[in-house]
Length: 149
Image (cartoon, rainbow, N blue to C red; front, side, top):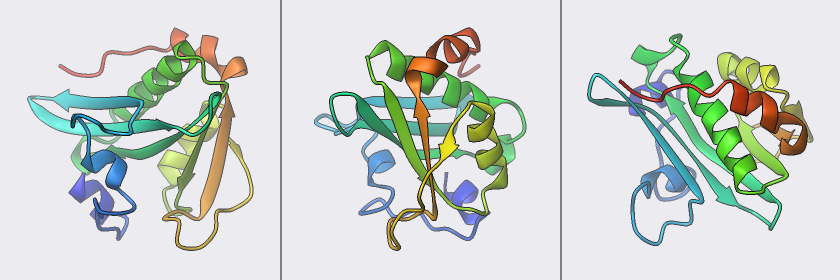
């Protein structure tokens, strides 16, 4: 994860902006959904989803190790996250990202995420996206992929 963030000029901050992924697997974590992908026995990617309201949730910490990018791992993680959020009854997902993360933005848009108003400065991202799960769930479930070796 550190390499992936560094490739965009970012540094992991598990105290604030990246706190959601800093508590993966810990008891009492606020994360509703935690996905970790392994390849060749190493962590290759992750993401978490935290509940916002009864019907909406926010995706945090979506990272794929730089050496593992381009292999469909990000698509598999995102597909599984969307499918699991739909199974848990969420109607909408949202996320913030950085405009320089072109591959991630392309991936989000390929799943039907829509760009909304930009987040406030200091939030960690400069782009906001949302996804209506009612429309997306059958497509995401149909694209389920194995997350590991």
